[in-house]
Length: 112
Length: 112
View 1 (cartoon, chains in turn cyan, yellow):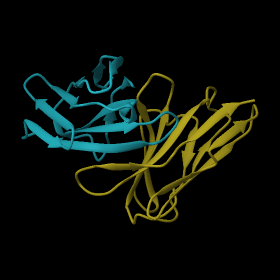
View 2 (cartoon, rainbow over the protein chains, first blue to last red):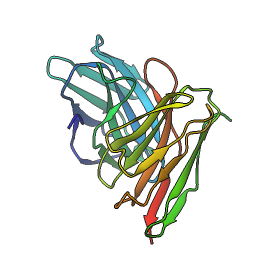
View 3 (cartoon, rainbow over the protein chains, first blue to last red):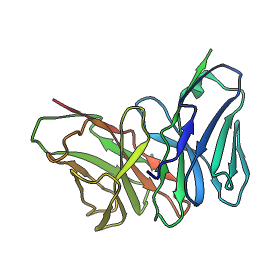
View 4 (tube, rainbow over the protein chains, first blue to last red):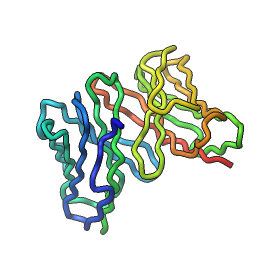
């Protein structure tokens, strides 16, 4: 399978704490993206990091990319109850055409 | 408001029946995608289209068919050959070469 792996599968934290999710993939990428999905809804793009970048910030989101380990992490700082959702990494693989490969996702629950 | 509209939100299929899921976008995007999402899993690509009158099979195309007669529309037909159609179906369009995708709200298909 070309799908990446995400861990943890589920994460439960208190409001105000930081949440870290990890994603690993198998082949060379053009970029890696993170998406959010609220229950029963479509996905929303959060952030994109290119293969030649190591870190990217957007508001309370911080993404890192280690191409030597073929892994990425998403950090959400000072979490809020409204951050409760599933988070997916998606890789734009080299030579795979204009398609994305999605991981299985991390379910984040932020308790207030 | 620009976006992707999927209809219906819920759909029920009888055995042996073909059903069609609608996907319309007014974002003026060339590329469109159909994904299937099963519980606890990531998205799997069914079909995609990079331009009008052209489409390609994704990873799980068997039992599905599509058409792309207009830039705005990319309907998906779930045929009777798809023996396990119960899933959440998501349509997306791609903005540019960075491959950021924009998603509809999804259609949940169940078998009667």
